[in-house]
Amino acid sequence: MRIELWSIGKSHEPYVKPGIEAFTKRLNHYFKAEWILIPTPKSTGMLSEMDLKKKEGALVLEWLKPEDYLILLDEKGKDLSSVELAMLLQKKADTGIKKIVFLIGGAFGVDKAIQQRAQFTWSLSKLVFPHQLVRLILAEQLYRAGTILKNEKYHHP
Image 1 (cartoon, rainbow, N blue to C red):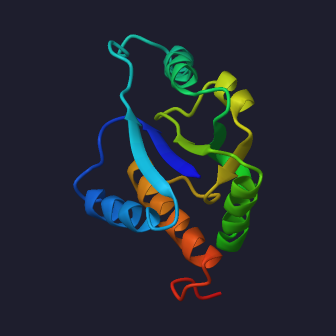
Image 2: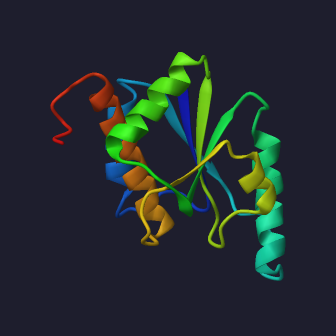
């Protein structure tokens, strides 16, 4: 199964880039994984938050394939433990899902069309984190899930 980690916005900031790269490299021992950074649409300064989310949403929907399993990261999503995340990944792999896309939305969240397209909405925490930190946490948690599935020592319950 392939994992794509999509994030709307600029490239990884220097303060998180080495960590994101390290955990993504480790994650590749369990699942083929890569980051897709979706640039914020051009000339957005004059757009309302709603219009910006619509433009970003249209771009995401354009890039998604019908068979992609979309997991949206959102503070209002379902809480999962690390073990529950591992079980979710295993279940999707067992059911023949070829690609899971984890989406970190733009600065103002995502359009309703993306919320409706997502098959699962996941909350990392009730806290709100900067998108750059969410990238790092996401990469680490997916790596942790891989180690849980292989019963390796990284995760200590």
